[in-house]
Length: 74
Image (cartoon, rainbow, N blue to C red):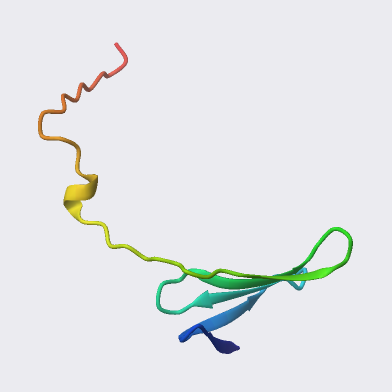
């Protein structure tokens, strides 16, 4: 099923052990989890103030002066 959390529609995914995860359909990021801890208590964790940043090619490209050596193992 699905549910809206913080103005984002989420799919509710259930693990075989009964744990639940609400995953945002916009970013694919979990916004809430519900699980049972080792003592048998049912807990809910909500993720708030999440910031999704965009990364440009310039952010991840190596510097132009980087020297790369290719060794073939000989």
